[in-house]
Image 1 (cartoon, rainbow, N blue to C red):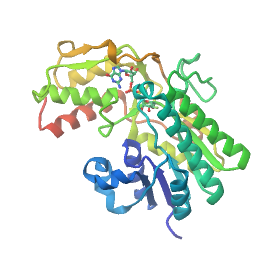
Image 2: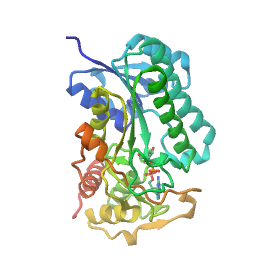
Image 3: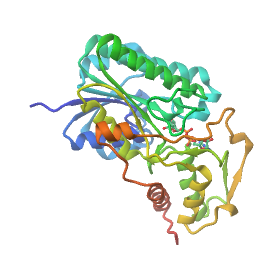
Image 4: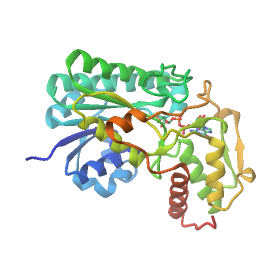
Length: 329
Ligand code: G4F
């Protein structure tokens, strides 16, 4: 039997790199959509997939161009398509609402429309987000919780979720959405708070910074490990029937707790280094997100294994190692 073919958008990101490793280990033929500029600057833009680069088939295309998506879908005819690419930084979505909405909504729509026309038997995964719940009425949030997004990023994800469901219902496509809560790792981008903190700790230890400026320390999030969350994506596409699933740990912690644990891992007291800047607060904050992933556990057999403490330890240790510093934590 020939290998299954997967097509991943956002393959150069944190989740794309873990998912690629996971699928390669299962003997998939893994294809990825990347921007042409990424192919021209592999040292920087392909760093997360550098170690598996030779085993991947990368296609230059843009999610802003239907023609280029059409071409790649026509060439690859994937068995499974994982749509992870997005403008995913919530803060930035306040600065540029128009490009966030355009890129995220059109990208999802282009991909679904191309699959429907050229490869309707493909199974499709949409990367939904806990940001869709926003100012949620219920805690914890599950698949029944009403959406109340608080940013154009969240709005774009709600639109993508509804597009995915509509292609499932209207055209019978095997299209599922994962509503993933925050998921982090040493591969997280430096703009997100978890990595900003772990990298900040390492820089302070290395003597390269003397402080770390953050925004709202009281916001609470449900933080899991990205390596485990990509397994849930794959499991969704192995089900006989497509559906939507919350993926979360069920635990929530404040940014302040994250900071406190990360600094103490390195033997430091965060109160001596962390400063807050009102400029880093968001115009509309989500104060508390905590997921209820019982459906994913029941139907997919998925549950998280890596806890908050272990996640932070791995991130801090890895950032310290990268800067060549040891800590006493
Ligand atoms: O790390 P964050 O930027 O992640 P956020 O906004 O929760 O969204 C992330 O998770 C979502 C769910 O999976 C994804 F859909 C989304 O794409 C992204 O991956 O911020 C977390 C919290 C916020 O409440 C923010 O206000 O940390 C607070 N925070 C405090 N100081 C900060 C900072 N966030 C950032 N990025 N930088 C700060 O200095």
